Image (cartoon, rainbow, N blue to C red; front, side, top):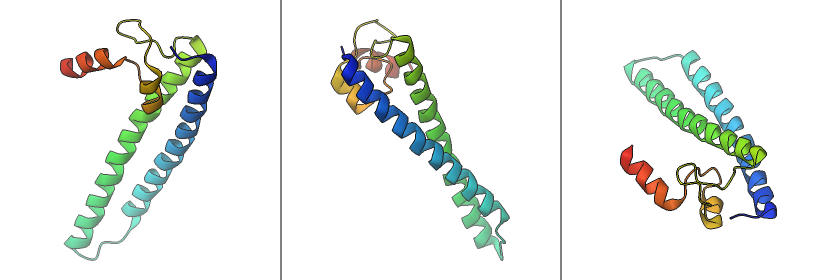
Length: 117
């Protein structure tokens, strides 16, 4: 199980990542808005703008998902349940938390979860 110093380090990583993602999401939204306002001279311009908007939307949606996972991890830190697998209630290995600080499951339970999904 992660000790309090390790949890504090991971909390800082989560907060930094949260700030980065929040900026990225706003940048994606701004980019989509500017693409919507751009003038299309022909169907190729329209196709390029549509494609770019679609890509920006997918990226933003993925980052929103990660942002939600980060916020959930920060709540678990505040509740004192961070680093405990939500499936089996065992400690999540510190190596796993360092690789994925918002992990909810230990490695064996993550594999079970993914198979069930």
